Length: 387
Image (tube, rainbow, N blue to C red; front, side, top):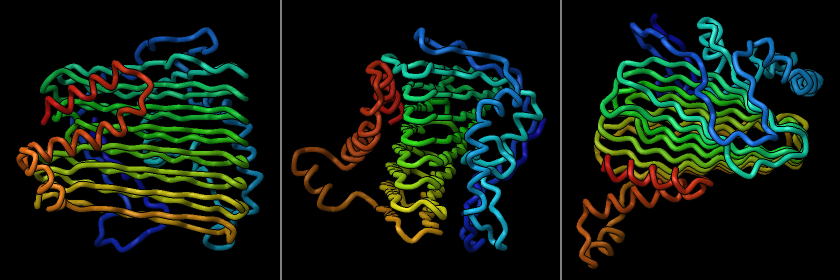
């Protein structure tokens, strides 16, 4: 089959010549041979795992929060004064958009649902590992459901055989009920000839919390998107993303915090390095809906450019329909400063080694947040190998 779809739509359009409004995935002659989520590791007794579920089953899981979203439409005027379609036809609005939903439906991809029981907090992370063989083309879909006052940590690792070619497309949807917390960690260490997309969408109810850590270190062309709907009052979304792009790799991402409830909080941090002829496009949006009084949001990107041939596009956006909010964004994009290089060289460290040290420091500042020592060691080894 061929896959051709538009993804990563910027919530508010900008000039077309900037090439930032959306992105296109155009892949040909794929044979999707696997659509099942691998068997997870470290499943505690408080977590149930149900496989081979349909989209109708997923719709049932999100029924109550979607009814709550529907009830808020009257408070959210659309561009023509009508009510705004918050979910855009999706069960859960995701960063990459409805095209990924359509692909999953077309390919009849079964959904695996991880549910943590009400009031329980898992001590060990659930681990889901996708390992691609050469020539493999895989699609996968998961839902992580944290019931009231519960907490779960899920680590998803993507790797492949050395020099493998292939394709991996993943969609992950999250539901944090009242007082619940979901910690989602994704680590991508695929071969440089693998094409990859990773689509995330989530909903937070009252006093709920979604925390995401995302490390993008491999693959040839990568598309990623996170969209978290802060539906409930005092709900929280925190994200830390680290990315390393080299040679002719591309990374196209779209992050959105939809802040609907009162006194919601979102924080998005991005740290990356571009080398050689790499291309990166970043879209980050804080969207304060009407009724989100007292909400705060902050997005910050810090990108290190280590080649004159890289292409970097950064599009931070704040949208606002509410007066009583505090939204901030910023981007720091540039090369290693002469003062840093002078400091390094004065201690016997040449320019190339100084670059390697700075790359490792940036990536490890994100990796150290992962609650799995073995995973941190694998990330460190992967970075050393590719550098």
